[in-house]
Length: 282
Length: 301
Image: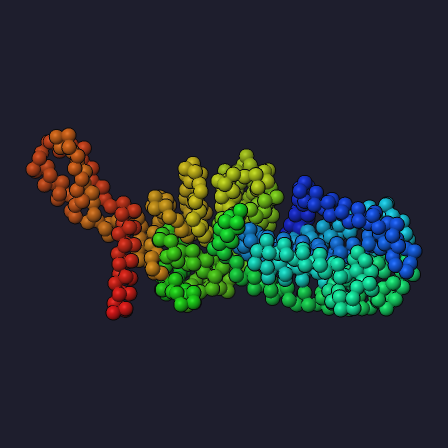
C-alpha cells in the first residue's frame, strides 16, 4: 500500500465525514439558512427594481452575482477561518503527529469546503429559480460556463484562503477576513452594477477574484443582452479566465511554502500557550 | 542493538538564553523514562526536540536511529505523541475519529507490528467502550485525556512521548493509566518517555528517572538508586513513655542499635524511613540551583 495514496484516500473520507458533520450540526445548518435567507430577502425586495438602463430585474441579477460571492466567501473566509481555528485548537498539530497527516488534513479541508460551496451555490440557485424567473438556464452553454467558473473559482480561492488562514495569528483575528470580504463584495458589483462606482473603485474591484466570479456567473445565467451593462459591454470570458487563473497560480505556488512554514512551527507548547491566551479572554 | 533514544550534548538557545546546556540521555527498547524537573527546566523543549517538532541549536540526537529533525513519514509512523486536547475534533465520534486516524498507519504495518491497533480493542484498553459512540465534545475532561492517550497509541508506536499525561486525572483514571503504561512497556515493548510533576507517579512507572535542572541532567537512575545516593538522610521515628521522637540519622542502623542499648524495651512504634524520592529530588534540585548561583556569582565577580 502506497502511503501517499493511502493518505489521499483518508483525506477524501475525512472531508466527507466533516461535511456530513456540518450538515447534521444544528448551529452550522442555521448559519447556512440564515445567510441564504438574508440574500433571498434582499433579492425579493429588489425584484421589481430594474437594473439601470434595462428592463431586467435587479433582484435576479443579484441572485446570480451572489453565486459568485458564495464561491469567494467559502473559498477564502471559510477555508481561512477553519485553518486558523484548527491551528489554534491543535487539530493541525494532531495531523502533524501522524504519518502523512498534513496531506490528509488539507485534502479533507478542500473536500469539506468545496462541498459547502456547492451546497451554498446549489441552494441559492434552486431557491432563486423557484422564486424568480428570467434565468437563462435552458442553454447548455449556461451549465458549461457555470462549471468552469466554479472549478476555476475553487482553484483561485481555496489555496489563497489556506494562505490567509496560516498568516492570521488566531481564529479571532481571522474573523476580520469576513469583514474585509464584505467590503470587497461592495466594490465587486455583487449588489449593484460596478459601472456605477467611481473609476478607482472599479479598478480595485477588478484586481480581486470576487468581481470575476460574479461576472462569470452572470455570463452563465443571465440573457446575453445583459452584457450591455457590464464594463466594455462584454462578458469578457478571456479576462475572467486570465485573472482567476493568475490568482489560482499565485495561490498554488504560495500555499505549499506558507503552509509548510506554519506546520513546522507547530508544537504542543504553542498550542498550550494559545489555549491559555484564549481562556484568559473568556 | 542500538538504543531507541540517544542524545548527546543537546543544546537549545532562544535568543541569548540557554535553555538546554548539554543534555545527555539514552533509552533501551521497552524502557520507561520519567523526566522530572522544576518548571522552566527545559523538559518540554527536550521532548519537543525528540518529537521532531522543534529544531535544536546543537548536539547529536538519534530517535529510533534517525535524527528527528529529518525524520520522514515512515519514522513518524513508529512514534506516538500524546497531546493535550482542547476542543479539536469536537464534532467527531470517538470510534470514528480513532478509525480515521488509524488509517494513516496502515501502510506502515510490519510482520512484527500490525498497524493500526484494532479500534475496539484500543477503545477497551483505554476504558472508553461505553463512550465509543459519543461525540468528542460530550466527553468529560478525564475521558478526553483517555482519548488523547488512545490517539497517541493508535499506530502502535515503538516510542511514545507523554508530556504530563495525568494532569487532570482523578485517582481511578490515574491508576488505569498506570496499568496501561505497564502493559505497553511489558507486553508491547514500547519505549516510553514521560514528563511529570508527580514524583509518586514517576517512582511507580519509571524504570529510570532523569532529573533536568538548569538545562542539564543532574541525576539519572532508578528511584532506588537515586535515594541511595542520598542515603545519609534516613528518618527515624519512635516513642518512649508516651512521648514521640523524630531524628534524621546519617547511619540509621547504628543509630537504632544505640537507641536500644540505651533504652531497651521502652522504645516503641519504631519506624525507619529511607529518604523518599521527593526528598532526594528536592535535595538534588537545590544543590544544582546553588551551584548555578555560585557559578553566576563567580562569573559576576
